[in-house]
Image (cartoon, rainbow, N blue to C red):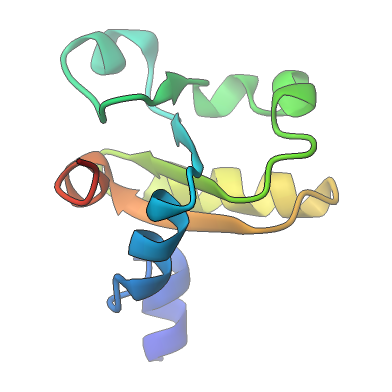
Length: 104
């Protein structure tokens, strides 16, 4: 059951997330542009969930990718879409606030 929770809402152990951020991960906020404009993670790009499929080229060749949103639900879906399209090293960061407090 815990693994389901982790898959939906991001890992409870932030070590992989911290390590990916330290290594210069590609930070992607999958919320709407209106939500993104209200505040996000420093250095993040906004690719709304409904645009992920059409923006796959932006993810190619990235060593580490962290996706996040408001609750962790859309980022879980984004991670799944990316992995279905052969993009690896995707971490569901959960909420944007969870990721923001790890970014310096």
